[in-house]
Image (cartoon, rainbow over all chains, first blue to last red; front, side, top):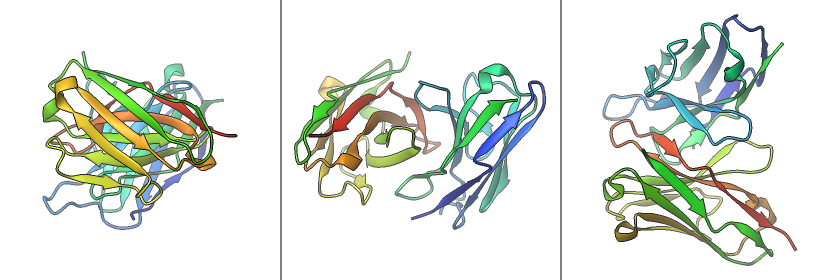
Length: 112
Length: 119
């Protein structure tokens, strides 16, 4: 199974400041079709997960442009350009290049 | 509007069985692959099972293989998870999630249903 390692596990951020979360996979996430199926999900308190970013850098419908994804191969990053209060929650990276789908342990974003 | 509504959760004794349902609406259910994902209290997300749009391809996580069974009824726009031989570590919120056909990622999730395994 592909192991997804996220850092940090907790990130206190000041409102309006940027935030960055890293995710590393134990093996390349490049699929045989040439795509890289690395996604980012947000889970606000008491809510189900919500898709933010798919295939490394594509924002899902309705996701603000302050969220961006980057990376390649085994190293990926989610960036929030200016953190807002509604961004509080846990962020997960997820690979769907091969079964079983696997998630990172999650990064808790908190406001300082 | 895409909607996924899970039901069937509750309290069950260790060794018992439970069947979860996920009612889908707002999209052509038969064209989509579906997943079950769970989240133990205070823990992260764990993918459990996948079923293709035709139902012919199914995958399970090792943690539930041989105990859980995924199925679908396209006529009822419904996804199911039959859970047998339940253990305390199966206590979790269970989510159904739709896979986007091109992006290979769960793009819509239900609100979840809580399963508690305890005597």
